[in-house]
Length: 176
Image 1 (cartoon, rainbow, N blue to C red):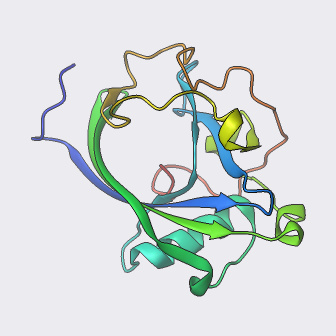
Image 2: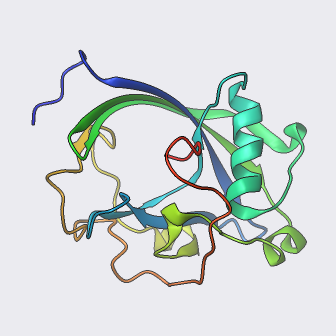
């Protein structure tokens, strides 16, 4: 399916690059709900809900997806933005994303719980040398309906599995 800028569902997301004391980045591994394959690594974060700004959404997403309740002043400035077009189960999306950093302490890492349905295939702290694959030239537009096996660069077929229990439910939970 070709993606066009008309008829797409608009989404705004706030992403957080959680970095530990060893300069490692936390990435979660998931897939589209209800589908086999199409797994990928992604950062903590998700949709901006009604009445939220990007910072409040980032704080809520960190708390919901990893447990620490970080104050707003622990978030760095926006380090990257992108607008991406993609399709999941035939629904096209036009998504705007803001990325911020947040450094977490060893004590915060020790109590982290990744409890999201979206990350059921694992989580891992990655160094720059261990990154899951080279970034594509344009990391945005994709059609999940055509990438059914998730075996491409960055796929998390061999991820570290962890036991995860969801505290959130269903569509509209604010996660991307």
